[in-house]
Amino acid sequence: MIWDEVMKKLDTFLGDTLDPDSEDAELTYPETLRILGWNWAQRMLCNHTPLAKQAPLRIDTGGREGILPPDIYSLEGILDTANSRWWWPMHRAPGNIHYDDDVVLEFWQWGDRVFLESEVEYLANQLTVYYWAYYPEVTYEMVDGKLDVRQDDIIIPQWAEAALVHLTTAHCFQPGSVLAGNINQWDISVDSGTPMMNPRAAQAREHLWWYHAILSKFPPAVQRTRGT
Image (cartoon, rainbow, N blue to C red; front, side, top):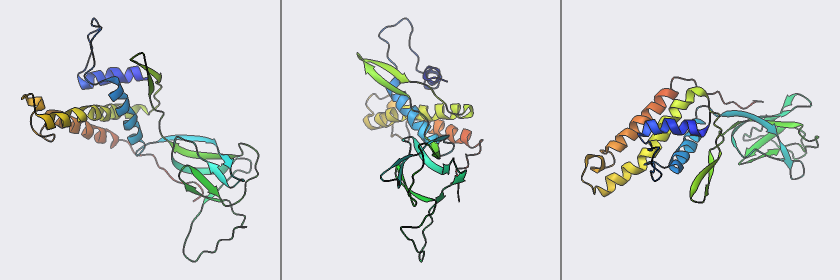
């Protein structure tokens, strides 16, 4: 699936289509807002089903630190592929004795790095990190005032597509609903009342409900740390 396919679905959900014969037509919900909402929705999906990946662990700082991939959501484990054994997450408890010269295959994570309890002198790519990742984001650049999508491949599970379209739609509706509730300036039903009473806010909540309803039909991915 690519971004253009998602755009067409969002046109339907948002009731926002352009006149193909008009050169000056503008989307009510611009593509930049839609991309922002879609990327955010993909990140929210990771709470349910992130993307499973693996990559070589790059060792840094004297063989005691590993740099995790930039798209990591949560760590599954570190595998010594040459010896077919998993490193263990370090367990700390009061009363435990720790010696700096212990030779144990343990690690602990802090931010985008893992700290290794044994110095690593392995050959390149011998340690493999298995992890749950964020989905690749749709990226774009503005060229001569026009939006140019650079990364448009979308690799979410097929069953999640409808849920993310609903969540993206809710994201697109929300700024307008808050603005309309605040200004109350046009004295028409869509712009009157508070954000909670506003029809656009009601639509946003409805699409958010559908997002959760669809996800509830599918079991979440089991995210566990190997070696435990």
